[in-house]
Image (tube, rainbow, N blue to C red; front, top):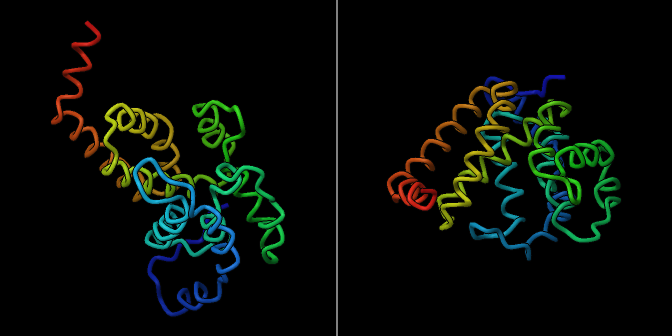
Length: 200
């Protein structure tokens, strides 16, 4: 199933976006305000940033946008009550299903989790994962651990780019650009040279 994405934000689609009630989901997401991110800021801001990226790319699918507001709640809030999403509004059950799709299960290896999205993820889950990764890759500019940056670039290259090329070529191009810029940083900082020396 293709996710709705207008060519441009005309009046008809603006009105459709206007009629999407996000407030209940934003309220649920405020529970993430206390969850710090490795790059700075908090997980609440990351939810809204991910939603902003989707809108920037033209996505106005109500389930997708609502899920983007709460996509990390199950994974990052211990004992999170899924009924909060399920009962948020009439879309709640569908939103919860999508959030579960992009949630890594406890103890699940990250590579297995990402492979499962590649192989079994819905179109919405793949688009949401790409927007989520764009937000994460942009925030790498504030990360000081070169090892973390390298791991994230590798992960994006191996698992996220195949998803992006399938669902949204423009997202794919941005992700390639982000990976290249982060690898360029690693190169200029001498990280790869030092890594080679350590491995010899």
